[in-house]
Length: 378
Image (cartoon, rainbow, N blue to C red; front, top):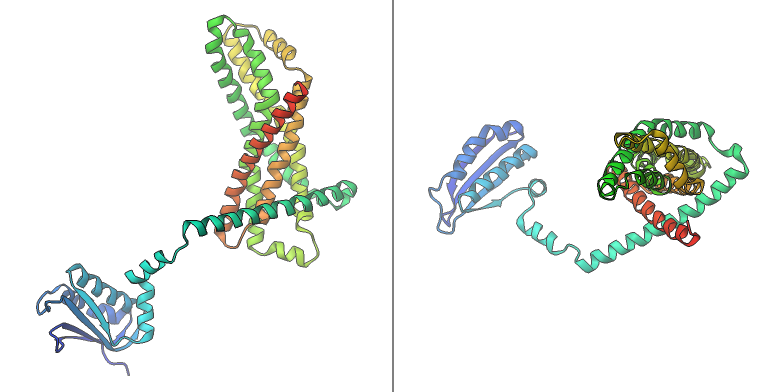
C-alpha cells in the first residue's frame, strides 16, 4: 500500500534548508502539498549564505507529469528568490521526466553551440537546391514521356478527371477572371488618360489598352490567377494523397502517378487557359470602353481603334503564350504535390512552394517571350 503524501522541512549538516517529499505524487498527491511546498520555496528563513536549497525526493514512490510540475514550480520559486535548488534522491525516471518538461540552461546552451554554422547551412541549402532541381528534371522527363503516350493513345487518359478539372479550373475561375480583367482595363485606362490629356491624345487609350491586354496583361494575369487558384489546389490535392500514402498505393498497383494524376490536370489547364485569356481580354476591353465613353467618345471609335492597332498577330501571340503559361501552372502545381514530404505541414509547404515557383517561372517565361517577340519584330 502506498504511503500517504507528506512533506517535511529540515536542515542538512551544511545548514542548507531541505524539503523532503514522500508518497505518490500524481495529480491528487501534488495538489495536496502544492501550496505548502511553494510557501517553503518563498521562505528565506534558515537559508545559508551560499543561497542553495535541497529538495530530497528519495521518498517519492511515483511521479507523473503533475508531480514533475510541482518540482519545477518549487525550483522556479527558489530561483526567483535569488537562490538555487538542488535535487537529491530522485529516481532516474523522475529525473528524465523533469528534464523533458524543462531542459536546463546548460542543455539549451549546448544545443545552441552545437547548431550548424553559416557554412554548414549554406551547404545544406545548396544540396537541397540541387536535389530539388534533380527532382524537377526527372519530373519533366517523365511527364513529357507520359504526355506523348497520352497523345498517341488517348484512351489511356482519365477523361473523367480531365472534365472535372476543366470545369473547376475553367468555369469556376470565370468570376474572378471577369472581375480582375474588368478592373485591370478600368484602372489601366484611367491611369493612361491622365498623362495623355496633357497632349490631347486621349483617343490613343484604346490603342494602348488593346495592345497591352492582347499581348501581355491578358495571358500574364490569367496565368497568375490560375497559379494561385488551381496550381495551389493541385499541389494540395496531390500532396494530401502523398501524405496519406495513396501515391505509394498507386505505384504498388502498377499505376504511374504521373499518367494517373498529372496528365489529365495538365491537359485540362492547357485547353482552358486560352479561353480564360480571351475572357480576360474581353473583360479588360469592357472596362476600358467604360472609361472611353466617360470621355464622350462613341463606342464605335473605341472598337475601331482597338481593331486597327491590336491585330490578329497580337491576339494569336498572346494565346500562344497562354498555352505555355498554362503548362507551367499545372505542371508546377502537380510536381510540388508529388514532391511533398510527410505530415500536415508538408502539404502547406508544397502549396506555398507551388505558388511561389509558378509565379517565378511565369515571370521567366514572360521574359523569354519578350525576347523572342522582339527578335521576330512583333
